[in-house]
Length: 640
Image (tube, rainbow, N blue to C red):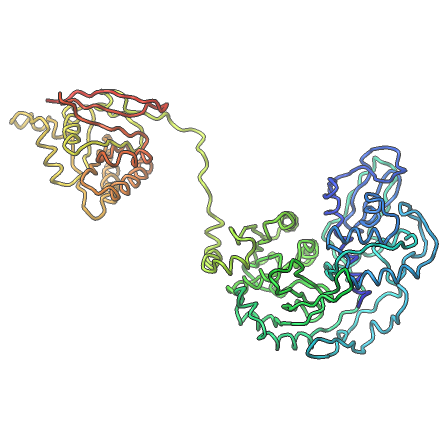
């Protein structure tokens, strides 16, 4: 099993070359200088090839994988030091079991030494894993597996994959110097996905001509599976699932019993996670999450521990069968996030880590059915690795013309499972109304806006040639009636007065009466103003209905004056806000008349607010702001 662990770890680290280049300020999608110390020029001659996970220099002809490149950058001469450095960068300290394995295998290698920066053709491997019967790895004989409470067997799957006769390290193109005693850090048995190795012949040698243009093959082509044995952990899953009642971890995380049963989740209260720097075993009380019968993820249930995950077996995505569903398929980073979405009744698949994006794209991009009645919702964590992985995922899906949408489903929480625990109802509501939320858009700033007209003089009150917007006048009711009566008396602008019948009658008593003759009445001021009756239940709706009717009849040459002085402050503000929407919708000037105590509220709803008082001479003293926000005062003389 240790050979399998090493190969899986090695292949995972080799796939981190793009991330490694970014860490050193290099763009894996573009050319960059060759790091070979003997390279004499500074031309951009080196390029990354995703097919063999190496960088190649078109000038000097050298190639490096991630371990050799780390050897140059960090001045590490032997392979073990290079491997440990890359492991530290992406997975943390090397596990104790892997430390011992490396020491043992390196100590048995040839004593011959070569430069870590030189590549020779047709030479034998310099880091061969020796010892052990290779037939035992692929045989059908069971291997013993022991927990605190039980001992059972792990058997290879019915058709075990035959391994090659020799297993080589990630840096198999380079020699390894004699091993020096290395200082290893704390344990951690983590490894990335076994995403396969490249087929031979996929990569054509680079030309030494620096002007040669490199045109890579499609990035997400099929990759052969790794030739490693796959063991069936079904017996272990069964025993862990039977022990699930010993922990309330799932209940505390908001995961339903139905989901725990459906995904065969389990609990191991004596999981050996590796060893610390002193060689002592690390034992976890762990949640066991099967991803297939040959692979599982272990999650440490100790909330105080920063060492939280282990993976074992041959890599497969958690809930990969969700890809067979139609409709919405959510892509999450961790298994707990996928379980959270499944708990709420939706389909989710977990990447199992940010480094598995390419493996996921390899999986879905070769399936033509993925474009049929499916939409991928990318819901990765909002930290830097999660966002980088989300961008890669969106680019890959876009290039393959697969429907996708990227969203921050867990906002404002760290991840989806935290959102489930702390605000389950909101998360459920978001999922139910996802289409409407994702189709929502903000209104952009208009390119052209007509100049706004303000009331700035006494004559402006008579003409009322204003913008199609809401204006507010704040004054006492009796003062308002006198002001409106004077506007009607001027007979310059037609007025639609929106108020109650009693308010209309009070106003009429202040308007100058025409002569009693019929002709004078027909031509008098009474035809200059009309009443739009308001009910006490829905005054804003009454105004909208009345104005719409007038415009449908072809009558739109008027200014609306809505009398809100009889309304309580809260209702007045509510109606004023609606009047602003009506003015914009119907392109109509509306003057809302409010009480003085509403002044500092309604001015935020209107294009212009004017506070009006009546002096001892019966004149109207107007206090407002001009279009530039400067204080403006003027007087409209009374109509005594």
